[in-house]
Structure formats: structure tokens, C-alpha cells
Amino acid sequence: MSDRPEAPRQRSVHQQRLDHRRVHRDHIAWVEDLRRWRQEYRAELIDLARRVAGHELELEEYERALNRHEAAIQAHEDLVKSHEQAIAYSKRGGITMPTEYETVHEQMDNRHEQSRQAHEALGRRHRALLESLAGVKRGRANDHQDRSAGHSAAERRLAELLREALATPLGERLALAAEVARERRLEIWLVGGAVRDLYLTGEIRDLDLLVDGDAAALAPHLAQRLEARLEVHPEFLTAAVVDREGVRIDLATARKEEYLEPGALPVVSSGTVEEDLARRDFTVNALAVRLDAERRFRLLDPFGGTGDLEQRLLRVLHDKSFQDDPTRILRGLRLEHRLGFDFEPNTAALVRQAMEQRVLGRLSGSRLWRELALLLEEQGPVARRIEHLAAIGVLAELHAKLELTEEFRVLLAQIDAGLQRGSSDGQAARGAERGPLYLVALAWPLSTTERAELAERLQLAGAARRLAVEGPDAVRRALRGLAADGAEPHEVDALLRPLAAEEILLLEVLGDDTVTEWVERWRSDLAQLRLTIGGNDLLARGVAPGPHIGRALQETRKARLNGVIGSADELEFALSRLRES
Image 1 (tube, rainbow, N blue to C red):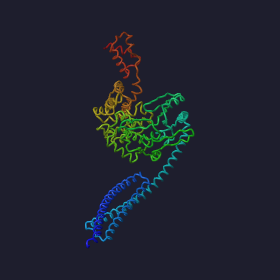
Image 2: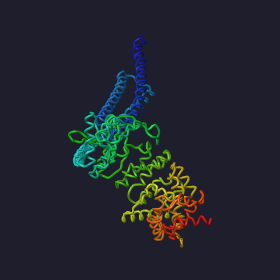
Image 3: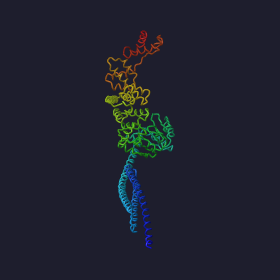
């Protein structure tokens, strides 16, 4: 009898203990979940902070993240309340929980409290970031308004300049191209450097047109209207029309491109106007103006090129630009010197990074020399351009021994000064081209073997290879010969006649007054001398055929050059040479 009343109490205690164990297991599982959630929220917070720094996350995403976080905090609070209720339930039943359970529950309480505090701290950080993003969003809205205002101003300016330019001969051709495109129901755009130069100078210098459609189909109709010569390059999706006055109109289908590997030529396919602009090198070249019948001339400037034109900055469209096409480094240098622009800081850093990775080594020699020649052929002092090439490591990429020594600097300064003198007196380049001229200058400090290596790296052939390998030594020999005492006209002629115009120009630039006088005399007199007789004249006088006739004529020309005989004496002098032989 005494045991029976206790039975329900014993069963109740047993049940309570089972309940506590279940709660204990549940709490352990919840704690693990909380730890996992905590890690996820921490990772999410780090990601949010990173993304907001890049202005990549919108306000709504923050609000959603904050709501999720607040829901998690509420779940924690509910969990703590549940735990407290379980403890209170045990105490109301008059049950004293085993010591180990009390310890576990105290630890769980502490963990819950720590977790709650940590999540509240995360919530505060969320709210701070939320406020920060709201400020960023306001700033972006202001920037957008500024850009929109700038875009509208640039569009109005270009429209006004275009309307004025249409009255010029080039503008008339541009208007005709637009008219033909409208007849074919095609959109046509003035694009790239043509828009850039129009914005900077108010002049149309090139007729580079982009067709939102098939340029090769449009070109024949334009050629017919202009009675012009047609060139079509279907593999490049381009065409050109050259009229009777030699004016060239380049047309291209809007294209997109893909670089299968860094430094390789891209795979090109037809695309949209926007995709075509996205393949350009710098923002100032990623501009297009639509030529429409109403002459509203809509501007397409997706990368802020007109803003960079205002600030005189060169900016790449993306950070892998120089990796995709390393020739853009040289094109950028060319634009820097032509326009007086500077690389903006990030682009300058990307140039340095690309050169450290030796991206120019991925280019074929012919591509490298083509871009290098275009840079060297730009007007103005070459010394600054070559100093820039040396500073960023291009010279060392061409040849390890090619350094900007003091001797090399003096040579470049002499060339610049000589060309400036020639330009001022109207004598300029005398048939010499700047690219080959500076090729000889580049090769000047190197040995013959090193010059041959340079020519190999640039894949030079023919006259260009001879200039690079033999030109410096040929100029040095001529300098010594012309400066020698007692030099005779026929010796001067023998020295100068084999030289290219670029080598002769270097002689004038580097030589003293004696050398310059000889070059002038040779150019105006000696080089023009022609004998009045020939081999047939000697054969008619009974001379037998043979190599001796050529030698006699050479001796006769030598006598004429030296002033020993006049033109009337040529035949008798040649016959006397033959009799003596």
C-alpha cells in the first residue's frame, strides 16, 4: 500500500527525464544549427561588404538580407524562451535536474546568450552597411544625373559640329553615305576615331562608318553613286569605297569578337553596334553617332568616352584589355603623343602589369613592328616616344641589349633637331619615311649580330631588314668618307648612290658642314648626271662587244663627275680608255 501512491510520481520523474533528454538533444541540434547560421551570416556579411565597396549590390538586397537576419534573431529569442520554459516545467514538477543536466543547460544558456549578442552585433553592422549603401545609391543617382547631363551636352555638341561639317567636301560624302543607307533601310553610324577627332577639333578627318547590317551589301550602292572604286573584304566583314579624288570611305558591319587565347587575333562575327563598341581599345574610341534623316545625330557612348575626352584621359574598357590584345599598349602610347593625353591611373597600372608579364612576347614580329612603326611615324620629336618605350620596357622586349644610353639619347636629339631644321626650311624628309628612319636609329647602338637578332624578332624582310642590319654601318662609313680630306666627287657618288633616302637623311642630320655640303651637291648635281653616250655608240665605232665597254663607260662617268671632261668629250674619252686597255 505504501508503495502504490509513489508509482505515478516515479513514472512522472522518468517521463520528465526522458523529456529533458529530448529537449537536451534538441537544444544541442539547435546550437549546431545556430553555429552554422552564424558562419553563413558572417560569410554573407563579408560578401555584402565586398560587394557594396564595388557598388554591385542594390538597396533592396540589403533590406532582404537584414530581414533574414532579424528573423534569425527572433528565432534565437524564441529558442531561449523555449529553453527557459523547459527548465521552469521541471521545477514546477518538483524535480531536481541531475547536476550534469543543469551544467549542460547552463552552458546552452550561455551559448544562446553569446549567439544572441553576436547576432545583434551583426544586425548593427547590417544597418550600418544599409545606411552606407543608401548613401552610395544616392551618390550613384547623382553620378547618373551628372553623366546624363554630360551625355546630353556631348550629344548636342557633336550634333552641332556634324551639321556644320556636312557642308565640307568630306561631310557631303558622309551625307550621301547616310542617304544610301536610308534607302537600303540600314542604320549607319560615324564611329571610333572619327567621332573622337570631330569632338576634339570640330573637323571630319576620316570617314569610318559602322553599318548595323551588311556593310558589303551597302558598299556597291555607295560606290555606284560616287562612281568610285570598290574594295570588299568579306573575311573581315568590311568594305571600302575610294572615289576619283582618292577619298576613302571605310564601312564595317557591326561586329563582336572573341579572343580564344591571349595575344591571338580575335574571332570576329557580326553583332550589334553596342557589341562593336565594346571591342574597342579605349573609351575615347568607343563612340558612335547615328546618321539619321532628321539630323538629330544620336550619340552612343556606353563607356563614358566623351567624359574622358574632356579630361584628356585614355582608359581601357576592361582590365583584361592588354592581355587580349597587347598591341593596345603601343596604340595607347601613340594616342598619348598624338593627342597629348595621359593614361588614367588604373590603365597605367594595367600597362605596367602587362609589361611585367611580357605580353608583347605573345605577338608575332610583324604585328609588333607594324604597331611600332605607326608609333614612330607620328609627327613630333621621337626622343620622347622612345624614352617612353624604354621606361615601360618595350625596348628591352625588342632586344635585351637595347638600352637608352646617353649616346642613344644624343643621337635621338640630333635626329629631332635635324628634322626640325629641315621642316623649317622646307626640305623635311627628302623622300625618307619616318618609320624606316627610326628603325635605323633603333638599331644604331647594337652590334651587327644584335641587329640581325632585332630584325629576326620583328620579322623584317627586304629593304627594312637591310636598313636594320646594314644601315648603321653604311651611314658610319659614309660619314667617315665624306669628312675625309681630298674626297673626290666620284668617291662621294660611290658612297651615296647605294644608300636609301633614310640613310642619306641621317647623314645630313649627324654630319658636319662638310658632310652636309657634299650631300647637297650630290643630291642636286652629281646624282643627276647622265652620260650622253651608251654602249651602242661604242659598238658603232667598231668596238667589239664585251665587259670592257661597261668599264669604259664607268671611267667616262667618273671623269664627268670629277669635272675632267664635258659632255661633248665623252665619246672620245671612252674610246681612249678602251685603246689603253
